[in-house]
Length: 139
Image (cartoon, rainbow, N blue to C red):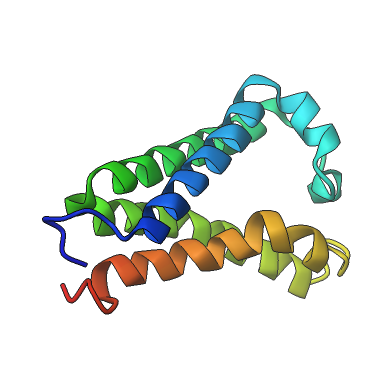
């Protein structure tokens, strides 16, 4: 992508949606960890409630939201910001897949994790690739 010009509209919309979604989830985790833990499907399968841990992960989500926002606002640094976001997304999604594959959580987590963890992970990793090496990236 030409970093001197703006993003294609679809990419800007996607980055804003990811920023808003990650900020909403991260803010919820950070400000109301007990509520988040009790409401999100499947979370209770991962172990006992730990407010500090939920807030730590919330901070990571807020960091990803900031990276997506910066990528949306500043095309010149979008590849770098998306790489930062993709590292968290990839590690987080990978952990979910590992826990399913090793029967740490019930196999039903495939469906629970698909919309909120696995699809955003695939999207973030693909966007990081696209921003740097896709048809318009050619870095």
